[in-house]
Amino acid sequence: MKILMMTNTFPPFVGGVSRSVTSFSRELRTMGHRVMIVAPEFERVPKSEKDVIRIPAIQHFNGSDFAVALPIPGLLSAQLHHFKPDLVHSHHPHLLGGTALRAAGRFDCPLVFTYHTMYEHYVHYVPAHAKRFRKFVIELVSGYCNLCDRVVAPSGSVAELLRERDVETAIDVVPTGVYTEQFGRGDGGRFRQAHAIPKNAFVAGYVGRLAPEKNLAFLAKAIRAFAARCERGHFLVVGSGVSEGALRKTFADEGLVERLHLAGSLDGQALADAYHAMDVFVFASYTETQGMVLTEAMAAGKPVVALDAPGVREVARDTYNGRLLKTQSAADFAAAIADLEKDPASRKHAMSQAARQTAEEFSMDRSAARLVEVYERALRRQPDRATDTSLWHHAVERIRAEWELMRNVAEAAADTFTQ
Image 1 (tube, rainbow, N blue to C red):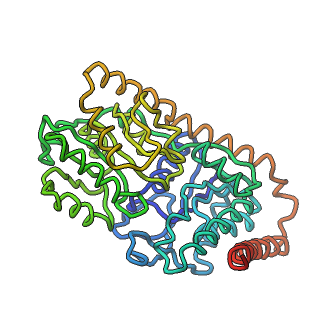
Image 2: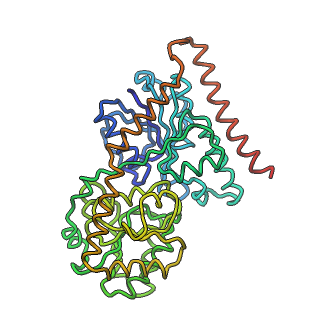
Image 3: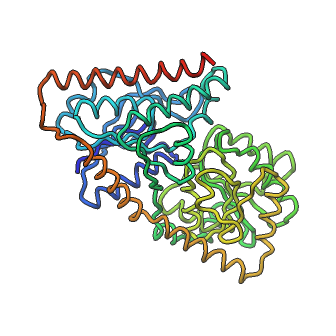
């Protein structure tokens, strides 16, 4: 099967979607499928990449760490003509998501879309009336889902949310898998030594972008409260982004800056070592569609303390593999971490084993096999592509794709601004 993936984020950019595309493409290629990836240019892009097409992009859009691909007509035509995909997989509903719809129309093949992100929580990156623009984004993304042949939801709670938003396209639940063996091996002691973390410290750790939508202001206050009451309490942060300065200030204001360890963005063995340097993984985001970093931490045997949210509740199970808190209270969050720190060794071992067992439920090979089943269902519903290969037919399909994109924007705007 020849699969064309289109994504607005891809390495060296670090983020959940980028890692999902990387993991699935690697696994699909191992299974014998051909995968071509179309992504924007980013700073420090590798000089040679196999089966990756880069699109010129504006770096650091609106002060963020995102790159916005520039729409250059005809740039992809020749390369995609030689590839001739059997299926197009879009990982965003905008920018290259529109290009994905056009490509599916041009090659008369199914379009699959993965709903990776709660896009309405990212409106602060665009200067606009927040409430109206949030509604517009919801309508726009739901409309895009209905232009696709199948939609992939990374968790059951996200699938339910999409149905509530009138998405009529068939929805399949396929979480991004975790390489359990990779994250199951790590040298936490070596990592602690390299980052000046005491051997006897009780380390709460976080992995992810440092951005406002990750609810890091709350998380920093909660961990600071824990560190203030626990002499050996430390906070390890793996990631980079615009919120780094605010994190430092939160701990510096209480004279606890030496308890904060900012490791920057990591991958590969260094990331696995970081997970093993933690005693508990902490997470407070409400914007996730699945808890990918949660399963990575659990593969390393780490219990989780997290706020109840879509994508998180499918992974974190209260009192089994950690704590899942129903309300956003910094005091309660800090107390939950303190309780884990005080637990006897037998209880800590039981939670560690439960975390590893949970991670196995989300193994990468299982997820990739489920994604292939989604592709096969999409292809079975697709009419015979050889029925009409005329230039006129292709022109009609391209016009139809453009019309659907414009109509989706118009309908979303009408629903938003006429109410």
